[in-house]
Image (cartoon, rainbow, N blue to C red; front, side, top):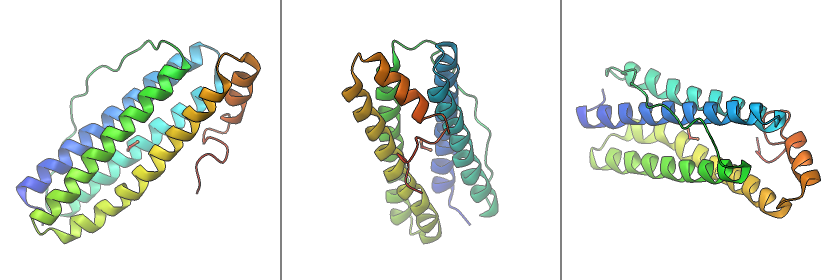
Length: 169
Ligand code: FEO
């Protein structure tokens, strides 16, 4: 059974993961309109991953005697300045999510909820990967700079939707 405090924290995280999914979805749509097919594929796929993160939390809350609540979501930004801006925002978003996850882990220890603490380790590991991926892609974009051929190749590399080896499995 999850405590009321832990249930509330997990439900807040449900909302945050759902917001992440919406942000990635908005970015994907923007990239698709720009003709950046590979980047769009990557972002659509990542939006799905964030939805999976949301659902995983919801199932856990319900299985542990709580009630996962479907949150109202703010409208994500529709326009982006440029592709560098997109990936900077992604890294920032993931850093914030990591801080949220760490705060829940901390709460679990305070509440002596070792079951949820154990469950949250999956998210801790996932966030290391999420931040690493965002940093790797941002580093690549920094190298590319204003080189159009470089951007073409970057976009092509992301065509599979996973960052072509940028994400270790
Ligand atoms: Fe679910 Fe990208 O954090």
